[in-house]
Image 1: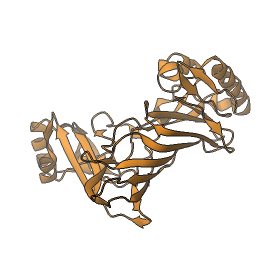
Image 2: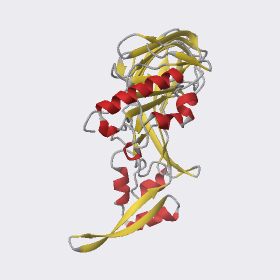
Image 3: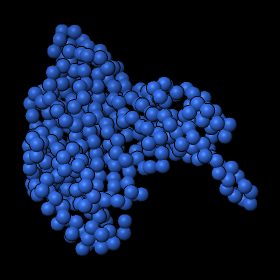
Length: 346
């Protein structure tokens, strides 16, 4: 594997092939961080094993939970989806969302080989107060970011929008446009609330037995165009998240030079896909992870994948890199970047 190095105790993985670019902001989309399931209360249940697969397009996890006690344990298993600030993302693309405004990452779960039905709780908050019912009373979508939510918000009757505006939940900008020879008033609505969503189901852990829980979802991967010059001006690529070092920069400069020669119209710019997975948060089970196995997949052999990681990642295939540990206690979250060539014509 080319360019595996250590920086400040963190393994830096540079996985041969594609680069990153800067400044084409209109074509960028935001990344949202998600993680895994949690128990809603402290339990004596132990995580005997976790097998985690992360790529730009899929997150897949298999858990083995052991109840070492003589009593059955019952708890709610919850999966918190990323919070969505409707104001921050207004007018901006948000990564790889599905069209479902509630289960907007396409989450599915299986327990001991059987698909699990789950409940969805989605609430809207403004200045710390729950405003879900107020929004619903006026016909406003709780999560306007997914699907056609912003369009639906704009189409609400002006009287209802004014009521929401009086409560500080939206700003309404009116404009006149001509349709079929007539002047028509239309509204451009900017929301101001936070959307919080969680999926959950009741789960029983029989005494002395192991329960296997598997789930997968589509991560909200952000995509953007950058150049090596832009990357060097921002610390997150060198130190905070992705740990690019001197050999990495040299490889990237070489790659962008070849990209510019192959596709002059793009000027050496390349596509960056950023994915985040929250690994370090405790899930209310007991002790460390007995056996932990991580697989990172960069999608195509020619792509580059980089991240900061405390441990040695081993190349196990054309696109895969793996890490294993026993009695594992996560100290950092996973922030990975996959860099790929831009296909001609894009």
